[in-house]
Each structure stands twice: as structure tokens, then as C-alpha cells.
Length: 240
Image (tube, rainbow, N blue to C red; front, side, top):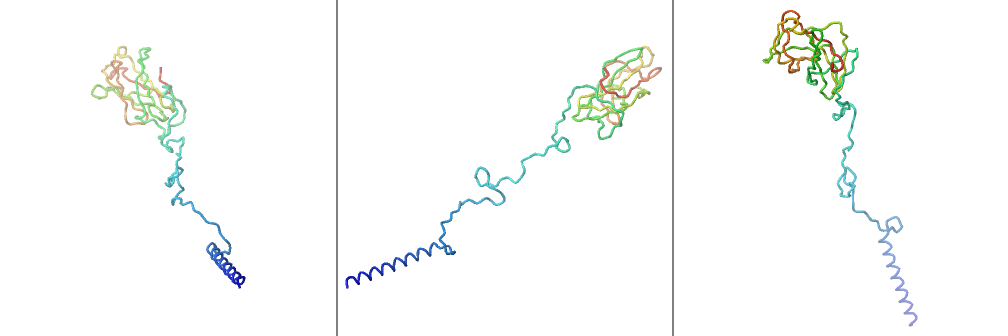
């Protein structure tokens, strides 16, 4: 009897162990009939619309480009810098015409009157136009000129243009110059009536606005014999 009771208890314990094992297997089943290992997540999601920033802060990276478009053309970049130097040397002369887009405007030029180079009873002054802008531009032909008194009234007639000169287009890089000759007979020799000029108004070719240069070279002819003032065509350089 004792052996029979021990056998029954062992059988009951074996059945209980099998039942517990079955319950454990069911809890770990992933539904595919196999036991799966535990799954983990990092707990960090990338922000919508961009990748996480490099510093790990979770801030979306900027969507705008960081490059800057550049170009050699000023219209394209707006920040281009001219490589021309202001050497004050003469420009380059060609026989082609001047387009309005390349013409030097009054606001882009400065004017001066160079030293007199008298000879044979003539007074000879160079009128110098210098490109003071940041772009290359051109001048062609004759400038306008007029002597003015202190109140701004013109003295004498408009200068005459010297004929026979070859008209060329002068290309002026920033700092380069072109010049035209201003000549008249010495009034003490010609006997022309004179007046004291305070200014010489210089108008660049094809422009309406004049540049005013202080005139310090004494009396100028305004009427009478040999009172004409003459202008030569613009050429590259300063006339000195």
C-alpha cells in the first residue's frame, strides 16, 4: 500500500509540472509557433520634416541651402568687385561706335584742366575726363565746353570743333582718362576782347549735365578778332 501511495503522489507532481510548463510556453509565443526574443526600441524618433541635428538636440536641420551663388557678372551677383586699378593712365581707343549702355555718364566722370602748353601765340589746355566710377565705360567725340563768370553766366560763344581729327571710341577702365584740347589765341597777341572766367563748364559727349572746373588761367577771349575758342576730339590719355 505504501508503495502504491508514493507512486500516485509522484504521478500527480509530474502532471502539475507539465501543466506549469505549458502555461509558460503560451505566454512567450509570438503567434507563429516559435518563441521570440524580447524587442527593444531606442525611444528617440526623428522630428518630422527633417533629420535630427548633429548636436543631438532633436532640432530639425535647416531646410535652406547654405551655399551662395556667385558670378563674375555684377548683375548676377550684386557683390562682385572690379579688378581694374585706378592707375590714372589713358584708356584704349577704337574706331567702333559707343553703345548707350557703355557710355560714361557725367556722374561717373571727374574733370580737370591741365597745364597750359603755349606756342606760336596760342594757349593750349588739355581738358581731362577721368573715369571715377567702378565700371568700365566709353567716351567718343567732342566734349562741350563754356567759360562762365562767377554768377554762372556764359562768357563768349560756344567753342568751335577742330575738323580733320579722327573720332575714336575711348574705353576707360576705372581711373583711366581721356582728354580733348582747348585752344585759343593769346588775347595780348590777337587783340580780342577778354573777360575774367571763374569756371569752365565741361559736358561729356552725349550728356546733358556739365562738370564745373575752377578756371585759374586768367582772361579768356570773348569777342573781336581771333576770339574763337576751339576744341579737339577726345583721345586716350591726359594730354601731358
